[in-house]
Image (cartoon, rainbow, N blue to C red; front, side):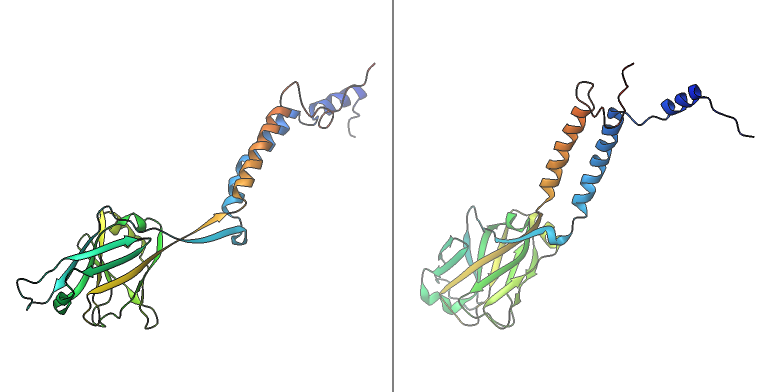
Length: 238
């Protein structure tokens, strides 16, 4: 036969298993928020992300222009250039136009490699055709990186791998080499480095709201302001 619990003992049992106090509830909520907020930001759906693409700026501390010349070039040939880098547009012109007869390659030198830090794709748009045997290339640190032609146009594209970017940015500058299909005393190219990334649109809102809720939890857990009446029944006056 089961034991009969007296009214006095029954009230002791109820008090032993009373609902948690405000500090305990607020502490549990704070722990849940601290764990849940970073997890929510990390697994947020791609549809809540904002993708952007921008064109970076190619710079040079001391841009230089040079050429690769034919073996039969006369000793007194003028090999000097006049060149300019302006808003990612490069122009290079031989000081003496007749020297173009012996010029095989144009070399744009001393371009800063910091553009490769966040680069995803690099386009070069030329005003002249390129010799099919020699694609446009970048030379940096003694290594060569080749561009590919886009649909038989004068647009050339280079999408560096992560390792390529690390190797290039380990040097202070790089060189662009172009071999025109025909002899020319003038060359113009537009440099278009694309930088692409993604930003979680609601990530900052989630983190900010979590911080605000944690402050509320801290205030409600104090003895001056609490949730008394919601988690613990008030004692009735005698």
